[in-house]
Length: 273
Image (cartoon, rainbow, N blue to C red; front, side):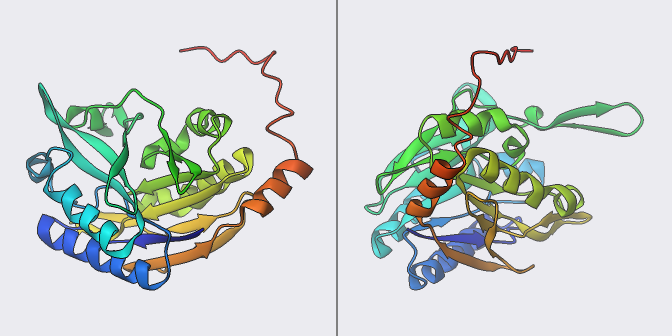
């Protein structure tokens, strides 16, 4: 399976962002992609007021545009995330959407983990003020291969990815808008850890560059194999990275280093709190 991760510098112009994303999908198709993955909030990276206004129904105009591109190229697409309207809630849902080669929406995932922090005198930020969290772990199939869906901050919570791996996922998909500050130290480290501990391929698609004054994303979109090796990494600009996934190699790793089957679930006690 050939996969392409698409790296974008989305701004406050929703229509322009979608045009750029569609152009990158054309590039991915020219590179022979079976699967192309877009970043978190691919459609809008402006201020909060504009972000809520950008939310729409799924299916809707944005998913229709990407579905048409999937049909045009016969290519699977993951809309890393977009803002979806939530019935009965003024907030939006940070939602990843999987579209198959025929342009059908086959899975949706709402971001589980929201970044809420209150450090008196230092910083206050609650993602939950504008985003409604999801409550479901989601795996889906792409060309008969099971994948696990996640979004950005989720990557810091290994339980999610372990559940997906134990449910049969071979690929873990991580779209993000990781900040430059945390990303330079944590991004690759976290992604490679999720790949190694679950013996899965990881496809990470990130936003890159400045999107608001004083706010910038890390980029470094990458594809990682189950051994933890970075197979491909985008440069620090808008673009793509491509790699071919070898599932026989994955099977070999899992056979020769059977960490998943050597687990001691009988003695693990992970509480709800």
